[in-house]
Length: 90
View (tube, rainbow, N blue to C red):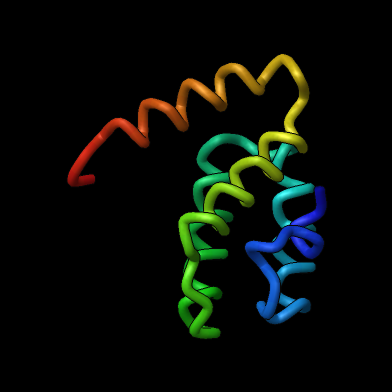
């Protein structure tokens, strides 16, 4: 499902959502360090536009990003997300 069609992004600036989709779609050609940089840039842009990332939006972004990865990288991505979400206070 496209982010622009996801209910979590209803009412969010559609230009921003389209840009987000484009960035996430191109991320599978980048290294892990570049992907982290992209995600930080997205977060900064959202802050500048006063767009708070709700938990629903964060989940939708992770699911969209995962769908863009090659199938052989999805398990590794799930493990990383699980590890990061189990860390409290970070």
